[in-house]
Length: 97
Length: 492
Image (cartoon, rainbow over the protein chains, first blue to last red):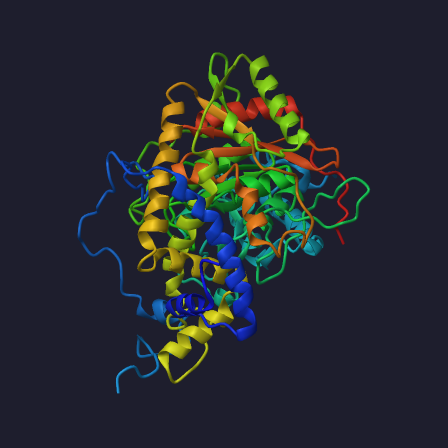
């Protein structure tokens, strides 16, 4: 297995997801199956190939709009879906002692 | 009187223009169909009040002569599109309380042309799946069943609610999104027409992001013409999406019925898979014959990196997903679990809010992007993506479209593959390369297998040449003479 249990726990930590002990094994198994399968890419020679991060019309590049404010002033709309908000701010647990 | 749900979008539009019926009558028939078809579980949210009010407004416009291109036409919208004031869940527990304060550009374009929202359609959670079984709201049932077989089948995914609602005559058309086949595979499984446009054709603004370099919105309809009509009204250049194209938007409908005589159709030999069923090969051969009879030239081509498309996709899509889904932290919107520690809050929120398939993909994405693995997996995959794109660029110097099967099989049974992620991923083998290369492609129903289930053929086009695809698709449609389901067993 290319991904061991400690590694799975590390990735879960990075992903901010926690697993119960009885779930980890199944996830480890699935991950390994998938990682082993995608590993077949290693047989492709890509030494002189540059990566494609987007298939968008690369010739022209992305258009930038003018840097002017054309939107805003709806603080209430933005916080309306927040589980905890006060006076237009999002509330989070205390992070600095 | 014949039920108005039996009309296709095009005929309904004609009927409204000729004042054969009102938009309200049309909408009421569709609401009745939606309510009597709940056993299919195609809709997450039904919006009959919005639909009736909009229909009354459309009827006023018809009377005043100010009717627009899609005036009074009821459609369904996949629950990945933000709709202002209407629950938009992405079929996830994470967003099961999310009411967007804004409207996606694509849906906004449609409402501005007079289309009417019938309801929000079920899909795989965050569009991750090929069977609609990963939805927090439960699976969608395919209106099609095999010959003499009562078993429930999946409608494909992730746009399973969209494909099922269109096949079951509940909506005149539906919006889907396609990241690796999520429009074309469900269209193939339900005998409907599904198009993924060129990357950049439709704005992604207001569509819940899965893998941003691959996601595209597109229409699912009962025929090719309806598809072209809907697509035209979805596209726009949108300053809010830097990847939305400013290319001129053609009147796609005009390309329907154009001759394909003298045009060249590529048949990629790498798409012949080992163990491919005879029925899939047969339908593919039929497709070739139909296009040949219409005067097109059939040419064997090679896309040598095809076998790497799927593993390449299953690195890139989860990588982008893990990054996009980092926003679900329980702070600004969506599901949230209280805790005095912020890290615990994030973890509890995400562990409760996401289903297993979404967690799997976030984990894979995080792994391939993590320090020490980035070059070996993520960067490698983006390089292979260049090779795949290059394959298509080369081939399109000598052909106008590429013809392939849409899927390796017809619709499979509920729960048949849900325990095995890898075998589920293999469903997208014919559709995924198109997303990696950013190309447009359509699935058109071409016939039934021996079990009586629909099979689709896929036509892949050059970037921004959806018109050529539609011309070819119409030839296949006319030749196949495909008939929709007659026995509406699901109506209660």
